[in-house]
Image 1 (cartoon, helix red, strand yellow):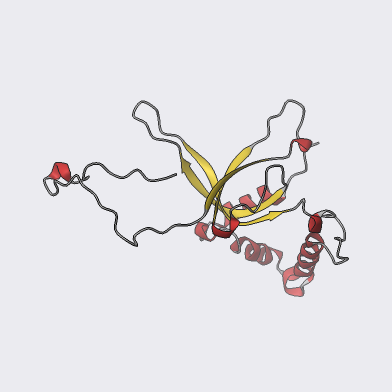
Image 2 (cartoon, rainbow, N blue to C red; image 1 turned 30 degrees about the vertical axis):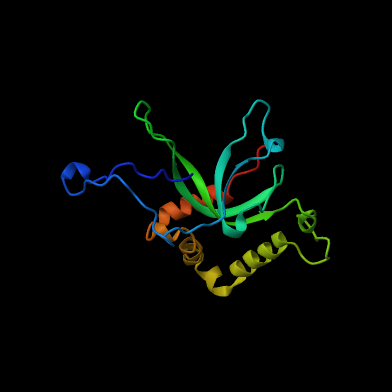
Length: 182
């Protein structure tokens, strides 16, 4: 993932530059921790013969070394295009990657009992989210106008899809709908 220093000036053909010696600008580099992690879906929920899907996760700064091989993780991030190596004799390929904003290891001690009460005796994150969801829909205003309430939820996701409510609704239905594979 390092940039290759140029050997000739890109403007050389235009007659604007005839330089071929490049010097690094002192203090011009910004260094950061960086790691790429490939995650794949759990094989326990797949049918016999099915291959697990995988996704490349790009981690920076404090997210580096947050998880180890074999960990079950919950990752929140932004989906970005991932360009494969460009060569003259090969067609360019674009894949998907996720730029991580948050990584949570869920097989650690604090998440061992994900469905109920954790080891501290407090409610788990799942129960708190279910309570918040229930309170949202028990609100009188949301009961009277469920379409407006749905639109409020849709407005809270994917800010780059501004004004594309049907696409946001379809995305939400794909993410939260369906049934688990058996």
